[in-house]
Amino acid sequence: MQFNRRRFIHTGLSGAALVASSALFAQAKGGRKLLLGQSVPLTGAADQIGLAYFNGAKMYFDAINAKNGAAGYKIEVKTMDDGYSATRAAANAKLFINEGVDALFGFAGTASCDAAYAVTKTSGIPFFAPFAASDSLHDAASSNVFHVRPALSDEAYKVVRHCATINQDRIAVFAEEDAMGRAGMAAITQALVDLKRPPLVASALSSVNSDKVDAAVAALMKANPQAIIQVSLFNSSAAFIRKARQAGFGGQFLTFSVVGIDPLFSALGKEIGGIVISQVMPSPRSIGTPLVKEYLDVLNQTDQAPSYESVEGYVAARAFAEGVRRAAQAESGKGKPDRGGLQKAFESMTDYDMRGFRVNLRAKKYESVGAVDLVTITPEGKVLR
Image 1 (cartoon, rainbow, N blue to C red):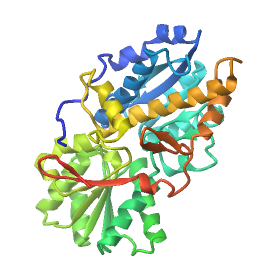
Image 2 (image 1 turned 90 degrees about the vertical axis):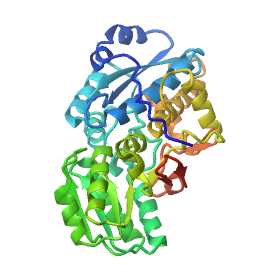
Image 3 (image 1 turned 45 degrees about the horizontal axis):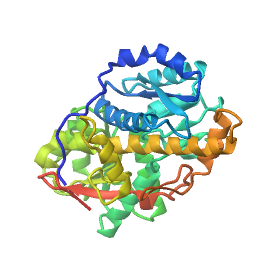
Image 4 (image 1 turned 180 degrees about the horizontal axis):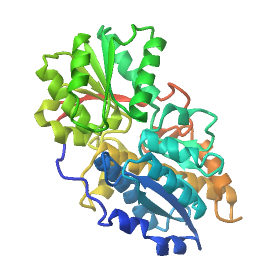
């Protein structure tokens, strides 16, 4: 199971063209169709992750629409690029709501998801499958938010527990100085408390997805940690790993799934060997899982490369379509599934078996720890568990 170094392929539409899809948007308002609004980084610091997530979802929606949709409803997505900017994501969310979309889908980035939800939480519109949302959006009070990925707290618990099993007590954290980094650091700190482990020996922050990490490396090396947990995107993570090793660090690196495992491999090459990476989706190369085989069958009809982020987009789209089927069945000919109908359908999906991969859209804290997988990658690109 080797990593494919092919670049993530956009669908050929530029960000501007995606925004300018008003004709399609108007057409989708009539007939047996549902319209979703998605704001995702197609450019900027997290573009590789955003493009893969976007393409995975689009791949499923295109496939199901070609087969007359979900319960006869075509699912159209109006996608806008936010460049990994929380301000732009919030503005896009407001625009989508004003234009009357049926749901918000697949927003990406902790700060972006928080900002977008802040302007939508009173609308009652479903906020579906945010990528890397903060733990506050997993709170029961956020009743119209539905997740296909475990919370940061679940990943933190799994990673900290792994350190405990190999007697690593001196743990440090390297994080980006943004909402994701702060949320991840808080989740790790709480996991240490919940698992009755010693507190962090040190922590350090750096700019988002930047290679300017020298100060952070110097600060953490002074603490002599056994393990360093990273809450950062691939460029920052790769730069930190290289410079920490050059500074003499011989301990364990562990990262959250938000790092982007494929772009991290592209950035590090053989230097990725031995790093522990948490994953919240099935491997895109696990053909023994029926869902993954289905995903690959669809993907092989495109020029995209398989990736964990693409799988997550596919899973998110597939879960949304299942909610549409359930809502349509409940309506039983009374009309198009509305926001309330979708809400009830999604609330019922607490143990949905998606062809060998179980999805709980309303998981409580630590309920999804078991769904988090810890993997390492050999210098040759082979994934090990």
